[in-house]
Image 1 (cartoon, one colour):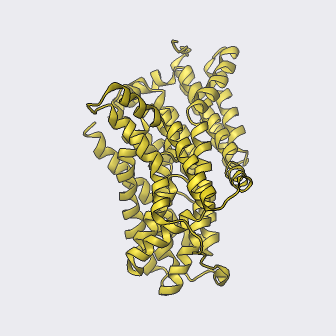
Image 2: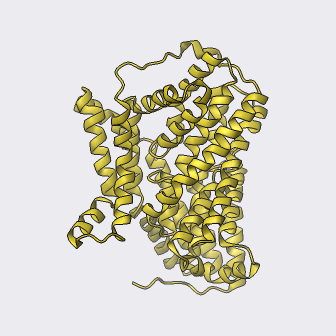
Image 3: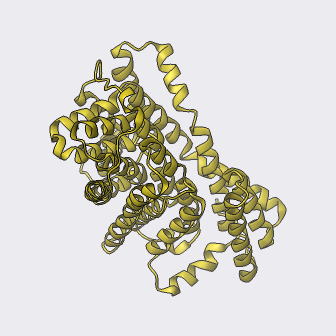
Length: 451
């Protein structure tokens, strides 16, 4: 079915788009209006301002919600349930404690960074902090080093895993908007996340941990290490790897010389929603039922894990409405040639858009939604290779991670858990987040040279 694009006057369209985005930022920043309402108002302003027929505006709103959620709602829900079981079963703690034992106290930063990266792909950032931050205090208490020395690697791993490696909500959102195969994004996302964690977590964490001493929180004595009755490291790691392995095998099977029926089966079980369904069922059995959890307990865990999903999906859906309003108004055909003539790489443009929204609004999800939506409206972008668009995903997720400051909930979450003031949080957390973004941009530009 051919898409309907309204051919608006280019000048009027650009003005409407600019006014709509400015109104969006003002509503969120100045009037503290919820992003869901702000994005709906902005989308309607863009449509009306561009001169689109009212029936087309309402159709585009419905299409924006449907098209955006049809490929991501199930993945975010399943991923959240998977992460909830991992969190409640003690699997996340087991990964961290085992790696710390293997690496030793001197390299505990590496262990915590890798733990954060693995857990960040399946657990929402906030949940990861709540579950794993006691381990930071435990190691810091033993070594008498600054809590930043260990917290920054952990936080960097969580942020990098969430940003770049499916099935995390952020990476899946951007990949779907730019029509990027999740297997391809996993292949480029894992090494990108590792490098970002090394630069912003291990290296920066070591530096800032030696430069700024932050003491243990006052209530740290109340935190007790609970290593009893935890699942085995191999079991937890095996369950976590299920969706990644199935999606990767599905992607690679297309290039293998194997029977067609085998390729069909591998392609089916590697579909992201099938892979996550299998992984969630495996987690329920091996980390839940087999370890004594009742059906009622599992249901309670799954219900609790789905609580934040509704709000996230609404924000993503409304961001999708703006994306389709811009696309159906013909903005991509107007700004595409202008951006091509600017001489700037599309990847750098995508990064800067995400960075601007992130710095202005604070929400990484809103920044990812806006940047990927705007880039997806450009025919020249969608005509590029899969690898190029995967690199653009990395740039967008990097830009949406950088410059976290006082308008970002994560900024206050980290500051309150570590009991550090705003100045120290800016010097440690904000720089860490920005290093992730800049490192991802450099890597994405390098990948684009080979795309």
